[in-house]
Image (cartoon, rainbow, N blue to C red; front, side, top):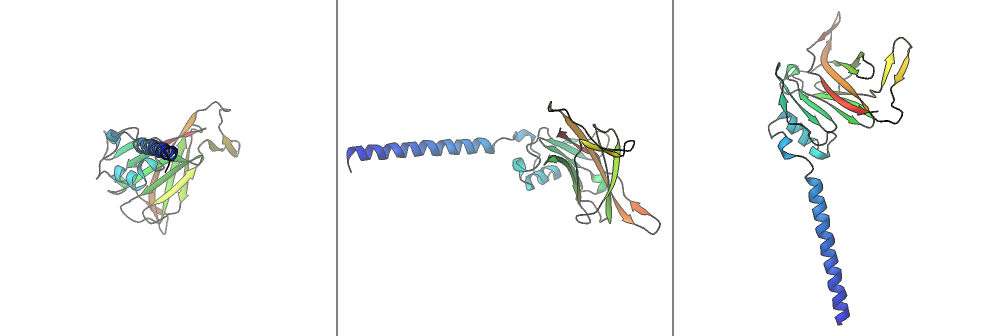
Length: 205
């Protein structure tokens, strides 16, 4: 092997080492994007759900607050970059309701209800429309369900059409809020359980 060949081989090895180091450093930086002081510990229903959905790579993203309890009721909540998760034990000890932004929609999910239900009632409202809409939602399982909506649009009873809010490219968002209850079909009507603790998400316009 000539001196020139050895020199070129050494240069290539050095460059490869630098590239590997940069790649590892970049990967490490990307893996440490969430503030560990805000991550709910193991055993937290909210934290365990977040981790089981992929943690920082989940639809919720990194937590932007710690998990907080409510001052006036049993339950807790945590805000994330793309949404919010709420522990709502009035629906069942393991009940979690959550809302997040994905694909231009506000997605509302619930699971872990303490008993099975035939269907669910969802109420939602936005800061765009200022009115509450109630919809009947079929179950994914007896204990869970999902509902999604484009909250920048709302139904106008006066005009009989969908009104969509826009900022003409100047940014902004609307806040969509949700609650859910489970219901059973009865002979003379529906027998429904309590409403969940509200949860909400900001959706860009």
